Amino acid sequence: MKTEFKEIQTVTKLITSLIITLLILVIMMGTTVSILYIKPTFFSDLIKNKANSAIVNKIEKSVLFWKAPEANNIPATPAGDEIRYGRELIIHTAEYLGPKGKVLSISNGMNCQNCHLEAGTKVFGNNYSAVASTYPKFRARSGSEETIEKRVNDCFERSLNGKPLAENSKEMKAIVAYIHWLGNEVPKGEVPKGAGLVELSYLDRAADPIKGKILYEAKCTVCHGTDGQGIMNKDGNAWTYPPLWGKNSYNDGAGLFRLSRFAGYIKANMPLGATHETPLLTDEEAWDIAAYVNDMDRPKMDISKDWPDISKKPIDHPFGPFADGFNEKEHKFGPYQSIMSKRKEVLGKK
Image 1 (spheres, rainbow, N blue to C red):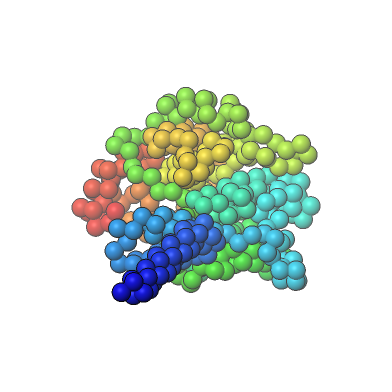
Image 2: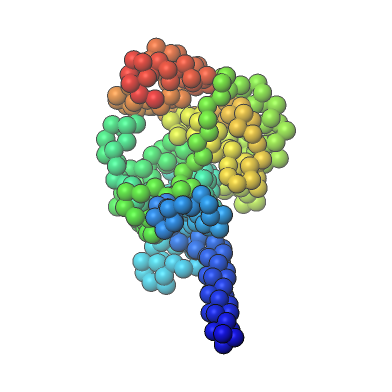
């Protein structure tokens, strides 16, 4: 009996040891597996009753956000050289393509990464994670199917208030190669968590430029100045902190001129040091600052061909005509609940 009891104890200890080892491995996965893109259904398929597993919940939270590949992993090949050049163009756009550009002078002096943070790699920093996986695609703004090249040129013409790149140019090919490299691990047709911008809930009031001005002066002037004109680098050929309005900023055809887009951008990234996990502003503050900035003068663009189907205009697109009966000010600042209700009633859409 004693021998059998000792054998049982030994087996029990062995099983306990194995369970502890497995738990340690699972916890370690939570700090390492985030380098991979994992489909959201992975853990739900693995453990159906995940609500009772704190460990799995912790891991799931840490791995769902897209993680950009490291720049030092770009291959040392001719194809890698093209990718590196594309990354360089995103970071230092003005040096190559700005008013004093050494290749072309086709943009306003801002860099692509002034809007697409950290060379288009920051989670909820307007990153490029889903571009390669979702393009070409139909876009209601143009009413046509668009390629990555068309999308890049949209940024040059709108956010950089400039001229388009030739689609067969060395620079366009390099930018597209870099975007493809960034999204290489994202399955075709999928949008990883953390792509693009944070989507904020609508306020129950209109966004307020007057409140936004007070907040801007308290929280934004260190980088962007009281006049909103940013801070130029020491060489005087690009902005370290970009202008938010005026002749050198994005024009009124840019995506960030929509309040919901700019408010989401602000919430997860501003002031300097903010992230989507550790924001430094409330939702209301982000909406009001966005309202103030986008109420200031900026370059105009011919947008007469945008949104050929006006019923598909976003709720915060600020230029008419509209199919819902609300005016431009209401579409620009809100409140949006009444517009949403009318759209559901008349147009059957949100």
